[in-house]
Amino acid sequence: MQAFFSYFPFNCISHVLSVDTESVTSTAVPSSASVRETESTTIASSETTTTAQSTTTYESLISTSSAAISAETSTDEASTTTTSIERQPTNLIRNPGFEDLTFAPWETQKIGNRGWLSVRSDTSRPGSLQCGVFDSSISPSGGLKRRLIQPYTWFVKQDIDPSKIIAGKEYHFSIFLKTTTSGSCGAPRLGCSAGSTSAGSAEFGGPLNTWALGVTSCTWNEAQLDAGASVSVTIVCASVTFYLDDAVLIEREASQF
View 1: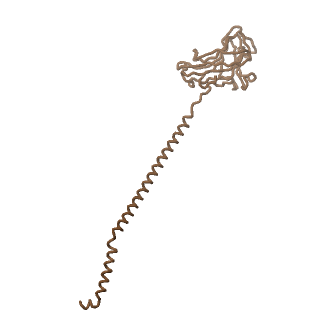
View 2 (view 1 turned 180 degrees about the horizontal axis):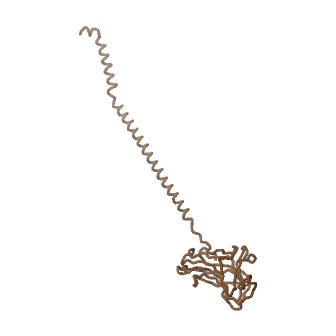
View 3 (view 1 turned 90 degrees about the vertical axis):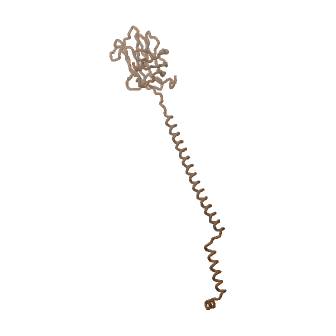
């Protein structure tokens, strides 16, 4: 043993021990300051991550809300577009200006083989191509123009599709008339009918060879519509020739008269 210590001096041993001690202290036992620093770094990092995640979630909710608002706006716009499309009132008279090749579906009733309808283009109203003409004489195909000497009720009428009429709703029937020949005539009358009953009528007329506008209010109930709806112009005369043009049957709210 003595020989061993003689080979290694004491001061050298102390130096080795000192080095070992410093090494252990430096690597095995971290200082409390280092621990606190590490903890602080970890907590800060965790808080940063949490905040970032929270922010991301919040932004996602905002995007969802915006999408919902956008969808609601689109729905409202679509709804507005749909409700703006409304049923427009239309003229229920067919061939109202007698512009077709024939006067159909207007019709009249012959009395003693007299009374006939035709269309003319030379005596229509300004801006109109043709008009309808009623003549109480024998048809030109018969070669005679003799007039009846006793008064008769002459009429021109058109049947109306009852499915297009709303029961209880007020309509206006209007038509232009010009009388060119007249013998013992009363006042012309325009009216609306339901079978053999009236749904509204009014007298009208003007001087010979002058266009006059007639307007009347018409209302049909369910029973009248079941019996059949029609409009007509009638006149009681021994003899007469009159012209008709621009007939209208439309809901009162849409009528210009």
